Image (tube, rainbow, N blue to C red):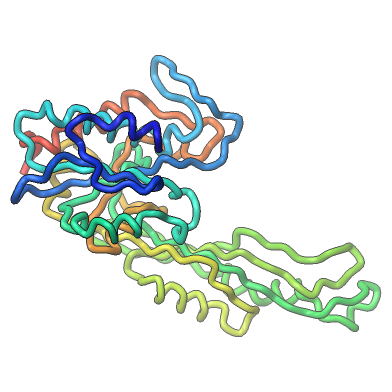
Length: 331
């Protein structure tokens, strides 16, 4: 974050800074809509891919796709914003940390509370990796632990105990058979899915286990609120095991009907798709700011050992945003 602060161009004032979130922008103009460019600077843990390197075609290394490349584009747009002869919008950057962990750890709510004027933004563009497509909305993300209890015993005399694995096999059957649910919102199809992503039980080969713990990951579609998602999962496992909700991140509103959405799509001749993942778009739309995902990173490379980003894709995002912010994009 400290490096990013040194790269903020002149003319962009510090609106808010707490060490975890930095919001900057030039002085506001009366009656001019505000566009937010948003991105995070934290990454997942390194996988022998730090430090990075630059080739003739790409930047290779930790966080290149998710989402150092997007932040670099944001900074360059800000640096060149003053060169646009006629800008349709005011511009602010929202740069933050702690995105790659649970949403409960996010520093964004503190910034939103400190800067209520951000809620007046016409559109927030989150530069998450999208392969240069405009991805609307996002699915919510619910994590839970499902525990099955029994009674331990010697495996030579299993009838003296109560095998928790047996309960888990029976109790998970209905859950794992829940089919993906397709939901179409404003012409975009999202898929709602529930997955068992981890399971652990037993302490030795000759012991009947008294506990099995399963991790449940539920990606719920934008037509459900977090409370509705919790109730759906509770109903799905009712009578089977003990459910603990670990975390719930809200889904993101589909903002394709926003009046500035079509101009952004036109500015880069972008394809439009649903965001079949969770992103901070959800945090912006939760407080009433329409938001979309658009970034130069490749989704297939995010979080991988071979993470990289194409210089040409970064240039494409930059050119489109500069066109969008000017009066050149289509109405």
